[in-house]
Image 1: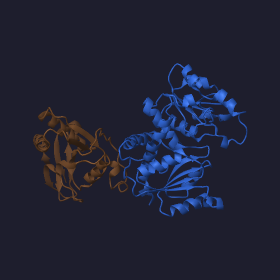
Image 2 (image 1 turned 90 degrees about the vertical axis):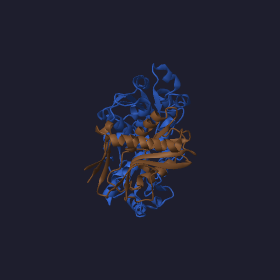
Image 3 (image 1 turned 30 degrees about the vertical axis):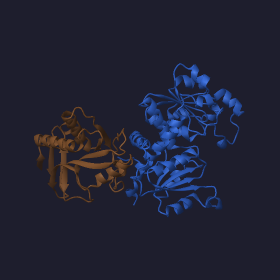
Image 4 (image 1 turned 120 degrees about the vertical axis):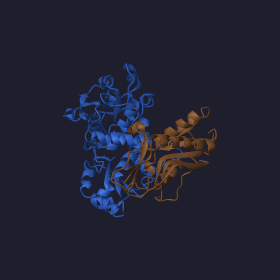
Length: 176
Length: 310
């Protein structure tokens, strides 16, 4: 087991990601942020609160998306997944959408998320922010626009993102 | 997450956790049904046969819509106009349909126990859409789901089931479901339409409709099933309406505002008057709306059981 990011590094990364978003979206007037359930929400909550600290005057439109019913492996794993809450109380029509998830691995979750998102309307464009990009393990042609950290991993390894609220400690671990 | 059963034959076989899992999943589907595109691709790879040996409007449409909202392929079969009238048996009919690669069967049948019988002979998951005078599990689930939506946790809540208890599969499934969720149940109606020993199911009974209304938080009013009554059990519909029908005046006379439900189809002016059925206390159309979400949840949750069968 190896620590990829400790609490301090993670905090710096979050701040950088927030600044990168501001660089491209300025006051977020035409932008909506959507976190992916379940684990992406921890990250998107942090990013949104960073944004609110840095640009307090801006109104950030923030929602949560569950993709359980859009997965391509519904009938492949033994048990079905517990669906989480989808909460998108606004229109995504012609908006700039920023999807947020913690780890980009095969790309299948993001594929499902794009399908799910399009059922809410036709966004102007869609960007992807991830904390960890697991390089070389993509199964679909999907890339992130904002990346916290790129790591080279093999399929048998696992990347675990822990948050203080849930696991007592902010850290990103690589587990063999 | 999945159910403890492979088929939804009756509420009797479900446990409380199953019912809660169905409700939680239905909450998600209800939210899907409020989106601009009311459809998810979850069951793209699933084919479902709706086999109805008895008439139905609501249940059949509701199941079909639920299947389509899940992106499943559906085939509809009605006994009238089929080879059943040429003498084909139930097992042969269903086996022939299943040999066309169907994954799930939704069945309504006039014989009580028909889906249990079928489940012993076929591999596909079966959802009981009503069997004779026995069970109608999805109706009970959507009834309880609709109550839960208005009243919160059903533990300790009082539900009166009023009318033709004897011939009602809705009554039996509701009693099982509400008992499992911790609600109290009272059945009310004419003595000839309440089965003997119904108390053994853990329910109260009364022949006095006003007493039941006073007691309850929810009144679930049932239709007089004339098609199943092969001997006279009350003199006239007019007499039934007079003594056992519910109207707005009766609802106004009790101190509290109770919810009024009906599984449909309503015989207006018999078991329920129009002013009561259309009053603000009535959640009859909520029941119909929730029916689609509940059926989506049941189909989705049972679809995960497929691997075990192969």
